[in-house]
Image (cartoon, rainbow, N blue to C red; front, side, top):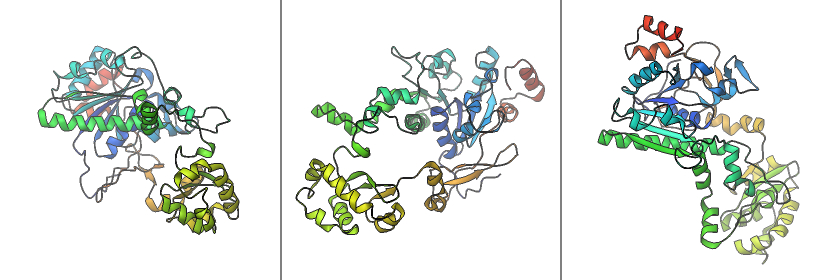
Length: 404
């Protein structure tokens, strides 16, 4: 399906070679594709391509999992075996015409696969080499494999999630993968600006562990500056502000966040309890925090008089509030439809479109492209023709499993 954008996207004309797999790296390069970059996904034909193609339980077809589609929209795919010398030669020819190389591999592998700036600068002095790893490319853990949930555990997240009397709990989504992918895309674009100004590329590095630790932000500042050790709070409560947590309604739960004094006063008025705002136990952030259990009891009693949807009609837009929805309810939310949060993505190679989440990036009169994730090797012939590989040579390389 042709793109219908009315104006250029910020990264139109930028070509990125992405040696990537699974979640964090593909998420970051997907954002770059949304921004208009041509993201050419380099997959290993000897391994059947990106491992995520086989991650179930749901599939559109063989090698085409819903998981894979969720991380790889707006990309192209070519298969090159970078472990073979001829595969390396093909890759270096592509590098000569690219703006960036992006990988998410174990920290010791970019050097082994010759994906660093030191390896590639003779092919293209302006090439940016962005590396996303689990624990970094140097140090004692460079060769360690690592995944999102492990980072949540070691960076303290599990100690902050769940109920105080329950076991440690992780975030329900792979938040570290997504945050690190976004961090990598930011680093790559920043380095690209520098390369275009100077004509010299560089390596840039991000990793899951550093990103997870960095996300501790104010909790880390409290400990480093005041010795405080934050802990799990009842009902997901904010560590220092109240009311800012889950409350019961007649049919479920609602999350309220009165992060300003005025919101607490408005809340009390809207639920018919203006007396609570005048109660000396609740007349400031400090007193409310000291008496949070009593305030929770009082608010539960008032809020259980109505269903969550009714309270949202009363509070929405005035008091910061949100219903607690499951994934199906979240996707069926009318606000999601109004925002165009779900869209159909057409397959370049044909076939039924894929229904997925739309990009969160918006650019006024320019719309991100809407192409479904590519089949393995769908773009090999077209991309390699740019570097002079004709059909006869392509068939020879395919026969020897150098490319697919």
